[in-house]
Amino acid sequence: MSNMIIGNKKFENYTYVMAIVNLTPDSFWQGSRNNEYTVLKTVERAVKDGAAIIDLGAQSTRPGHTEVSADEEISRLERPLRLVKENFGVPVSVDTYYHKTAQFALEAGAELINDVWGLTHDEGMAELIARHGASVCIMHNAKEVLSGDIWQPITDFLKGSVSLALNAGIDKDKICLDGGIGFAKTREQNFELLNGYEKLSFDGYPLLLGTSRKSMFGGNVEDRLPQTVESTRLAARKKVLFVRVHDVKENAEAIEKIYEHS
Image (cartoon, rainbow, N blue to C red; front, side, top):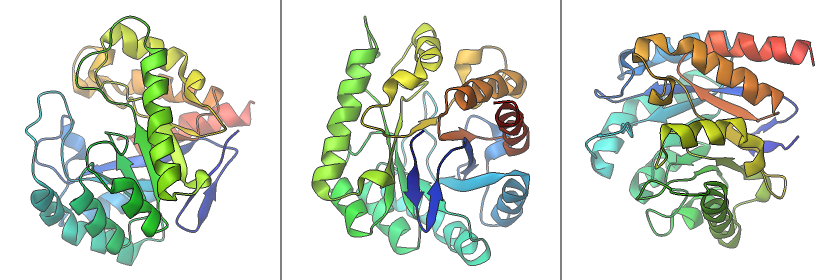
């Protein structure tokens, strides 16, 4: 099983929970929306429930979202990020593809940049992360929905992004990969990806899985927790290093049970 360093913590030999804490008014799951007044309580509960990393997002990337600027992201992040860093010792990830937001976040103490465009959206993103000695989650994305074989384009994209990271000077043990479930893929492709997720790992890079309450599970967003937990069990059996979820407690408990019996 692969390992990864985020901040001063080493993650290995387990499937860890990354808690989604959205600082947006329009995230698709209402239960995840926070602001500077609710964020401390939300993070406290997430940590108590078993979150190993807090992932702060200041922009919704749900289908049909309205893109906001880096300045807007920063204004949403500013106080919550500071509050979380002052009050908790847990590593903080910031979900952004903007160089400007990432720079603000890293200077404010974030240890990981979670980039849904895999370092390809803004020039200099990889160099910035390297300069701060930070970690990165590289996600597959595309402007058009994939067609035909999905594995080749996803793997090619991830390999290209890893090269960008390594060439910029990001340490190999500070990189993880995300197949981008729900991004530029049909429902069938999302399930194909989920069921073969371990195929994405190359050269020992660890994986992060993000399926939490996504539309691939059908029905209403409120009713998608059981399928999310089932996908987390699958991730734990496949020795995926991280799952990024809204519901920390249920997913953390599911992981614990898998490891107890493995």
